[in-house]
Image 1 (cartoon, rainbow, N blue to C red):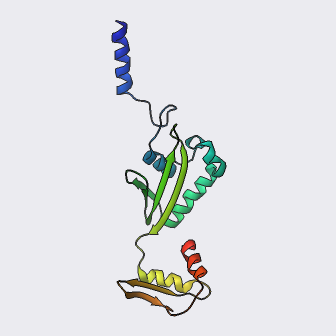
Image 2 (cartoon, rainbow, N blue to C red):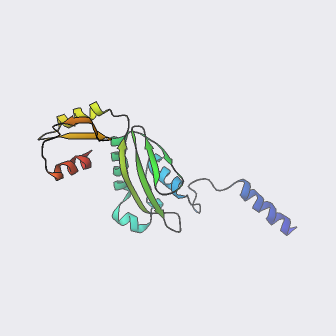
Length: 166
């Protein structure tokens, strides 16, 4: 009878697993990434202490808001392994995530941000509005798609700053 009762209880646990976020449950990498971008608040309990020493929840929230300012509203995490693709309303970014043995985020890197839906004409207009001397040359198969002061010599640092500021 005892054996039957234990088996019945185990069956109930299988039918009714702990709700998401319940202490004792861990999320996989993809679900952890999704939670960081969809939850209204970011909890310190989602992160390993080593991560929190460098990036507290308030800073992580600022990073998330910055990404949404640049790329629009977050839509989903795509992919099945690192690097994942973070899909936003107006672009995408790549993300690598590392979890510790307890399922907390130990490492998170967001990189390769790219805006979508921006025409070359709109890009050229933004470059023209920048202060100082600017130039832009976009080639496809050796053919110029956009050329604006393309022959003007500028410091390489200027091109780097534009890429960082974009």
